[in-house]
Length: 351
Image (cartoon, rainbow, N blue to C red; front, side, top):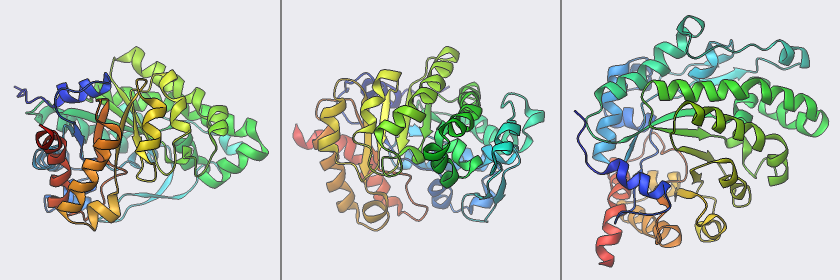
């Protein structure tokens, strides 16, 4: 039986642009949870039990309201035929694009995530780790499923530099490549929900304003993301969060109209500027600096920056405290704990 501890109620209040007396927290963890538990990544990426135990331990220890299995996010690509390097203690990295020519784009075929025989590597790691976590849940955490956004997914397969070049020189080819993976992106998310995810996390770093303008985002990515959201919400009524790296203050303003429930801000974003632009339209999440503060700072540094984030964007609810991007692998436990506690201690000190 899952113990009711108020995790989901606090998060759901934020998604509804309200709050229930404290600021919910997302520890934005993955590999750091394995390291904190004393594991190398090679011992967890294909071990559902170790993944679940590590992520649940870390969520409880760090006072997070979310939990995500320790997974290798590049496992999505291996069954398509993308070449990846697999280090012992870090994420897989795409080493060679699968579709470098227009002919390759035309020939590209993706698997059905619901058909295990088509994607054994994805099933035996990504799916198994998420199912293992869902089966071991003993508190009412929101369980994060994960996928890349369509533009980022297309960039991994086509090559991000080439895809961005296509958007300038051959926009129809860029459209074709992105459309090839849009339904696939939605199907990955639907499979995550089928495995027990209660909220979807869609990471789209290639869509950052540092790489494409808001107008280019509207031209190439807004429609595909809207299609993903439509397909997912037809499958199950789960909240959808999007994360983009870098500066996104202008681009994020496009997202509430297509059904995004929460936007995760990189630490490059000034929440004091971003929050008024989406207030009352979409929840925000962020944005303690992951390297300079969480990994390299002290618990007091983390507490101070966490309070600053809440002051800028969380006084009226509709806000989730988190790091500005994934917490680095070697972050001290004490620092992530300090961020987790800040969501409650901020309000106690104001009482």
